[in-house]
Image (cartoon, rainbow, N blue to C red):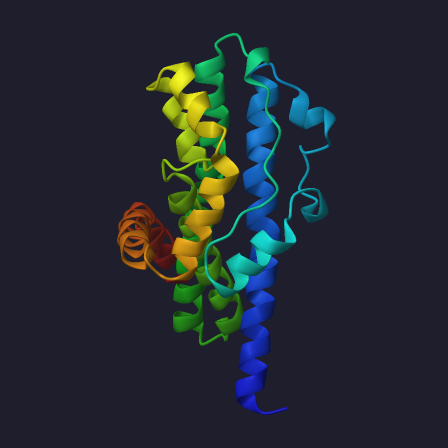
Length: 222
């Protein structure tokens, strides 16, 4: 097996592992926050779990692996079980992207630590660094993509706070068709530049917010 093939297999394996972590965390966050707010629909469906088989959509995973944007099986949430339905829906929807941003933050923290250690101690952490780097990039990408105010993405659920219920649910009747059109647009690359712009901003903010770890690691390596 030549080096190029090995590199491609390694890249695919890393992407697959990261995906098997990112999607379950995202969907479990929706389910857990909905449970905290009074809706057990997702909990009763067994969605408060990190088991990928409970969350992964084959088509969504393939899109994520080969296109860079994808989706998992949506968590069922019944807003009628919340004391404040519009607020409960918005908060439980926001939980998914926030969980991915937290994963990205932790990945960048770990990346900075192991990068400094590998440089100062001459230890080869190249595979781990690649894993952490891709984990940060994918989780930032998931968060940004899902915050777009397009049905049925999480950003559209947050719109319940600002739109009249009649208008919102009128739009949501067509969410499957809107999602299909959106994936075609993404596949054709029409959203590449705006998504890359937003992802770069989010990633740069994360990098800035993790800068404190460098000084701490250097203290221990003296």
